[in-house]
Image (tube, rainbow, N blue to C red; front, side):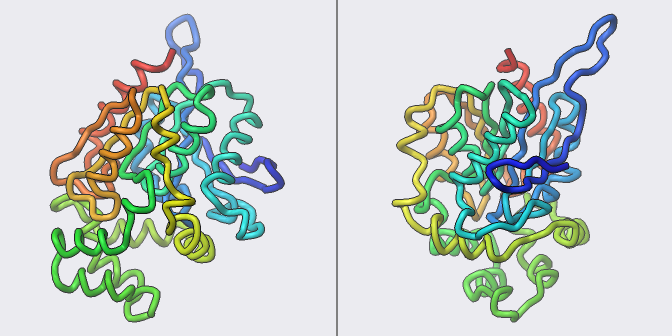
Amino acid sequence: MYANVNGVKLFFDVEGLQFVPDGPKMKEKPVCFVLHGGPGGDHTHFMPALSPLAEIMQLVYIDDRSCGRSERVDINTSSIKQNVDDIEALREYLGLDKIFILGQSYGGFKAQKYIIDYPEHLYGAILACTSPNADDIDNARIAEHVKEYGNEEQYRIWTSNAVATGEVTFSEYMEIMGPLYHGKDKFDLKEAIDSNMRGIKTDEVVQHQMLGELASMESFNMIPGLKEVDLPCLIMCGERDFITDYEANKDVHEAIKNSEFHVLKDASHEIFADYPEIVFPIIEEFVNKNFK
């Protein structure tokens, strides 16, 4: 489905009902906007991992402008701020009052900005495996984690940027590096490759964001804004996440006064796919507590 918002044709898809039969009445479930990672990714990365959450919330998956199935527009308009303004415009387009918002990784960057700019339209926010500023996703810091959690080959592949140089294909990259994204004994190579094939990745957005906004503390630093937030927030991360590490997620938690923080033992970046039996009950309890 598409919505024309802020001069762009934005793709969104919906999973689950907002109203469900409950005896003699219809019971309302909250709506949750799901914000994909990247930058330059799309919503399909969450599928089918998040589908069980459709039992407790209506999920609205959104592709950023120039990403996934959304319209390609001027690359210079791709930013966290613009993506968040598009999300807010979609909320208005759909006639929704308050929603939950869920963001993982780069999706968590967008969710933090939405919390700062539009808190009045939220019941609460779910932030997973994310970071509040450029310092916490520094390449040298990530490389040190690869050295700590991985092996010599993984460290070489990561630091040589082997996919970009063409030394390895993405499938080869996933075979080598994939286990680092997942918890112990949780990596499934076929599913990782299938997930990549299903998705639509926009390299131009990746390069524009990573070399621009996300590279500078001046343009990417959520902490001052988060310190002004008084909104229920659930923050979750893996203790062995090599990209958005424990310290990064702890920084988010410490900045938001009304937040709860859960660290998953042995987990890495893909907590939804790897540990649904732990993560989803935590989310359900948070949603039930704050859907008022």
